[in-house]
Length: 318
Image (cartoon, rainbow, N blue to C red; front, side, top):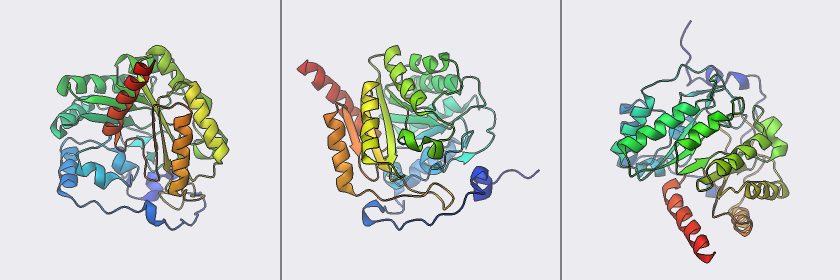
C-alpha cells in the first residue's frame, strides 16, 4: 500500500472528499498578508526542519506565518501531523495517527533553546486513540523545555481530552505551563456542523477545571467569527468564559482552507472586531485580542507579558 500523501487534498482530508464545494469569497483588503520571504523566516524554517518538527503555522495554513517566523516565533504541534477529528473548519490532516515519538519532547526543547524563545506555544492534534489523549506527552514536553530553556515561558494549547479520565487534564496542569489555552472555536449552536466531534460545555468545563486545579494559572480561549454566528451568540460565549474565570480571549476571522471546508459566511470588518474587544474588556477579561488576523498564538509572547501586567495591576487595585 502506497504511503499517504498529505499534499493531495483527498488524502489529507478523506472525511471532506464528498462534501460539496462552496465558492470562496474574495478576501477584503484588511485580511491580505504578504508572502513570507525574509531571512528570519528562512532561518526559523531551517531550525524546524533540522529538528524534524511539525508546526501548526504550516499545517493550519496560518496567514501570519511570515511575520511570526521572521521573528523566530513558531508554534510547535506535537504528537504528529494527523488528527483523529474532522472539524469542518480545520486544515490539519485527518486520519489514524502514528505512534507517539518518545524523542519529540527533547527535539522540541532543543529547537526552543536554539530559537532563543522568551515564550513558546505548544499545541497538538487531537489523539482520541490514546487513553490519556496525549496528556503525558504534553507534560514531558513542558518538562523538557524547562530543562533546556529554563527562562522560556510556556503556553499550551490543548485538545479537549473528551474521552479521557479526569487525570489527563490533571497531568498537564501539574506540569505547570504558564498559560493553559483551549479554544472553544465557535458558538455552541454551530458545534454540530463546525466541531462535530467536540462538545461545547465539555470544553467550557475543561477551562473551569484548570482554575480549580491551579487558581494562579492563566487560562485562555478563542473563537473564530465569520462562520455564521450572531453577535448575541458571541456575547454569550464571552459570558460563559468569564463564568469559567478565563483570563484571555482571542477572536479572529475564519478563513476557508479549501472549497470543501466550511464556507465563510462573511468577512467581519475591523470595526466589529473593535466592538467585540470593547465588550469583552467590559465583561472582565484581563486580555483581549480581537482583529481579523488574530490567532491563538499570534503575538503570544507580547500578550503574555501584558497579561501578567494586567493581573498585577488588578491585584494592586484590590
